[in-house]
Length: 229
Image 1 (cartoon, rainbow, N blue to C red):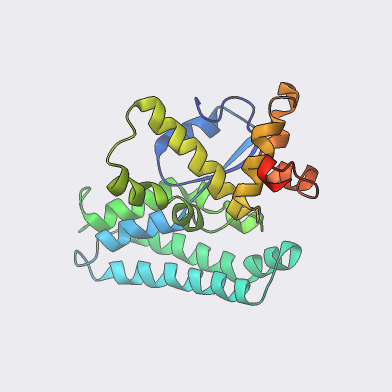
Image 2 (cartoon, helix red, strand yellow):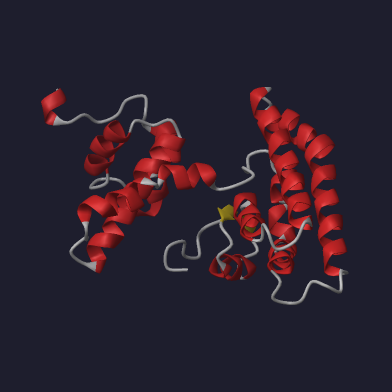
């Protein structure tokens, strides 16, 4: 709530942290999508506990293989949605049937690793299916985690951020830089422009200074620094 506030609308793609689900439940304009890679990790942790774990992992691997094929074919928009409906959706349905079958087994006690992995996935069934109906929603958050890997890597060098406020500022700046890269925006050009523009830009339209909106509105004629003039 503190980060996103009450003004966010659209698809919220996250890991399995329950706080995101609570946030989305209270806001009808938010569609919560969750990450298949995080669901897969629970099955990976369960490896060795039961032979059926490999069956679950193979089903998830097949789903990822389809996503790779769609990406390599360059499918976007309606074509991507059609491909997911034709190929991915049956794979997802098969995975849920398999999960239901595992829960019918008498030998899987409540704390069994496979049962816990299956229950984790089934609890998030609705949010794990969002990508099937929206071609713009990735199957996982891996691209976001790669983009923010600089933070855990940086901690080894920084050792500390001096204060909680400093840590918050690191998170904000790195999130902006990662968003720039995801949007195909040069981070340096963006920051040089926005740090000048923000002083005069109407506060009621601050969303126009986010990397995605900025790319559309200002990227063609960005403000330059004095040393570039």
